[in-house]
Length: 193
Image (cartoon, rainbow, N blue to C red; front, side):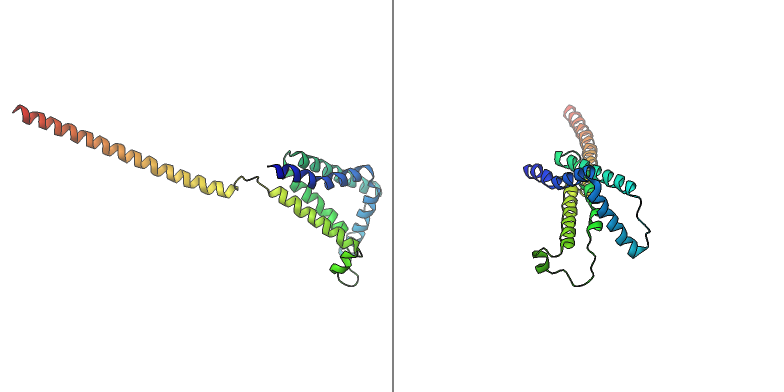
């Protein structure tokens, strides 16, 4: 469908750009990852973040995977798999972008004024995860596996009933043919006498 051919590249665009940026310029992404690690460590006792080189490698690998899955989605190659991969790859970004609430609540007025950048970024990440999940679950009009199994059973049962009906009709036809031959033979014998 034309809509899918347009929508998939539009959805994939952000993932590809973000992934390529992480591969080419990992510095800001490493800092964001380090900050997220420290926030999680403060809450969970995770420990110190890994060395910068390890974080840089992780960021580049993550960015490459994200760019690759985005290109596959945009090209329409394995779209369901690549969209689900993008949803999974965006989860760490949502965790890293989750704002730390120190006081007050996020209100629509605060978001409209651009005052809570962390909440806006988290909302963007969650929206992208949702869009990727929708794209990943899109079967392009094909029925689900459950539907196909149910209908295969119904088709099998209908075929079995049809075979039994044909076999029964064949048996009755043979019986009728025997009775007809016997009646004709009796009629011929009666005519001769």
